[in-house]
Length: 255
Image (cartoon, rainbow, N blue to C red; front, side, top):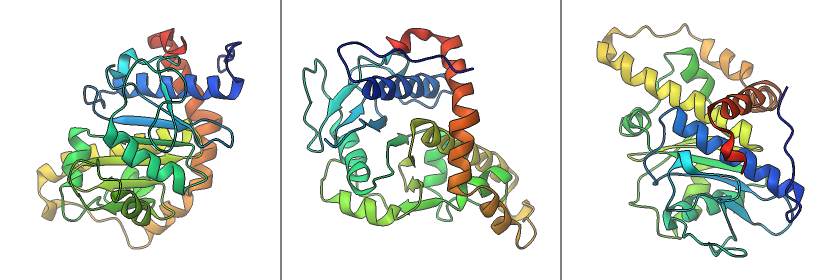
């Protein structure tokens, strides 16, 4: 069973719960070695009408993130309440664009893993040659590289390219996922990253030697792994298990 999340008396219970879940995601990203020092970002919307969201302080490694250390900012990137640490402007640009445009974007996660970057640099993108890539690939959009994402004008193009998809390969840059919960977002990220890792490994055999799945099976897998079903899988099964794993690794993320 999942560990009960106890609210801090000085904070709204829903905000504290969001903080604990997001801090767990940071620790799990570090555990799977997906982090990039301090230079990528996971964010979560604070429940409520204010359009505030949580993001990592720019001076902490992912394995140092705690629920209380996360910085609450508004859509202009300004801290809400006291904040002892700055946030990364590029993180604000990418994450705020999606949080503002998508009501279902309760969480947004963006990585720079070597495998994700490698696939992002491939002109053909994610290939449908593994079950994992078929699970992830039907829900993936692409966005062309425009430089380090500090230009607020890029937000509109990011949102337009994402459309109604829940994952994106930022070409020549990395990977990104969206979810209506931290758990759903993380599970999508897991499948996308695993698909990229498998693709880099299988291409070592040469693309001409790959086995192409039978016609129609890619569409079948897309139906079997639809966003609603994947969200339920994450919320009911995978994320509770991952929270237990985060607790086993180091419970200080709850502080």
